[in-house]
Length: 271
Image 1 (cartoon, rainbow, N blue to C red):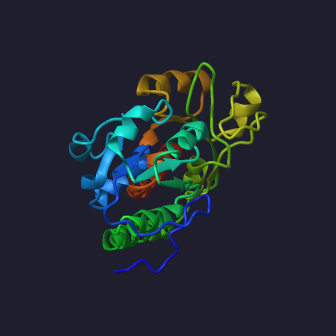
Image 2 (spheres, rainbow, N blue to C red):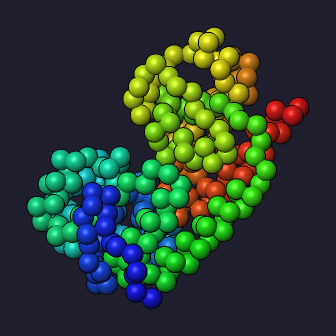
């Protein structure tokens, strides 16, 4: 199947199909997606945070982290394509890599349904259209199942990604838009940043129906959740950060995870 959609990335750059591409991915979630589209043999480099699928990525050389990239190592791998993300990768690093990597594919999904365009972009550029369309069909079916479930009452939940200092997410984030699929909203905090810092206060706690502690980037645990729930007196849940914030392959599982999360929170509310 040939791509019938434009192969245009998040910066509006058009790309040509490249069936023999040598790919370096600096985005863990997209590395997983590329592998699931059958493109692991063409991945010549990935970050140390690209851990899924474990068997496939074990054979792909590491080139540093998402931000502390080993530029010279990438140069020696001679990639034809570099896959990056606006939120995860540093612009100066990408510009330095652009001096010798011919094609930079920039991604920036901001909502769950953006995963459809992401999969089709990857499938179209790297000639895995059939696999991409199959993935999109599965995603659309799972999204339809999520939306077919009768919604519960609107809820305000604080999604925490860090402590010391405490940090959350604004409404202008992929995570918040995942929560919005359930009819949940995040509170507006005084800090206007996309990932705002905040301080606990009685006024904030009174606004919340629940607190969600993410397992990444900070490694919150059930012990953190139990202690904070005792401190605040409202429900606190540990949530899988990969399921809530990774796009690409994990976003499909993330839709199923949202169903389970809603059932857990509603169950606690009914007690």
